[in-house]
Image 1 (cartoon, helix red, strand yellow):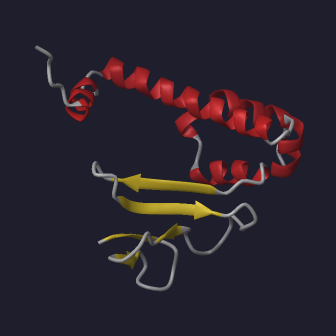
Image 2 (tube, helix red, strand yellow):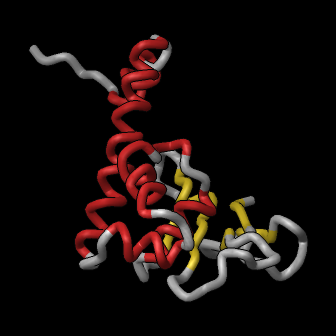
Image 3 (tube, one colour):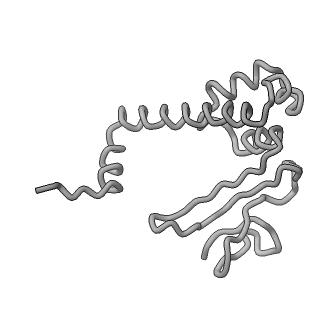
Amino acid sequence: MGNNINFSDYFRESMKDPEARRLYREVLDEELSWLLSYLREERGLSQKEVAERLGVSRGRVSQLETSAGLSMSLESLARYAQALGLSLRLEFADERGEVLARFSLAADEPVETAEPAWESAGPGWESAFGKASRASWAV
């Protein structure tokens, strides 16, 4: 007879342990760092070429690709994606998979826009600032 274990409950319980949280964060850090270098290589770019596009040193690009992880700001991540000629999309979804907030930035869109780039994902959304903006969340 098998045990019926709800993964969400198991995960939530596991994250109460500080060591388990630390290890989980390390894995996430490594995955993001690996993903950055993978995407760069897939685009056929060297670290030097990405550094030139970002206006930073090659060493800084190397640092981002080896230890960026979750400490990387959203702006830095957006700039890195754009240096590769890629768009960036980030979604926050609830346990049912319903998107509650979405960030997107096109490959050719300035990162320094005056308004945040959070956007509506459909009906029932309201601007975060009460005006026409891409900064939105579900209501």
